[in-house]
Image 1 (cartoon, one colour):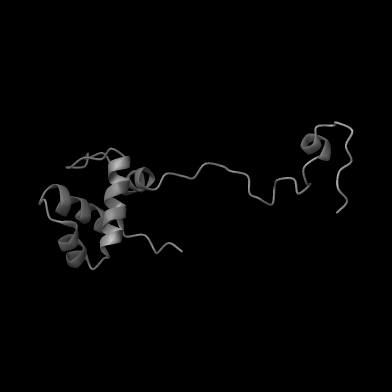
Image 2: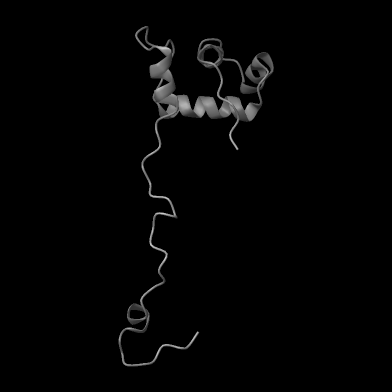
Length: 102
């Protein structure tokens, strides 16, 4: 289960430490009291969002959050799909053979 998201202030500090100060992820993790995996995850998200330092002045916290955590696409859940099994004619090709009895 994913942990709680960092505050935008802390995310901005993480990006600053990496891109302006050129600190290694381990040092950033220790400084912000995060795991290295969390630092790596946020930096990966920033790269996927094509963010650069300094962040644009017009980029507010809500916009930054949307860039780092884009909404998930609508995917039908497994429960929404039909629970019927495959049609035997599709499996046996309608060749006249009898389907095995269950």
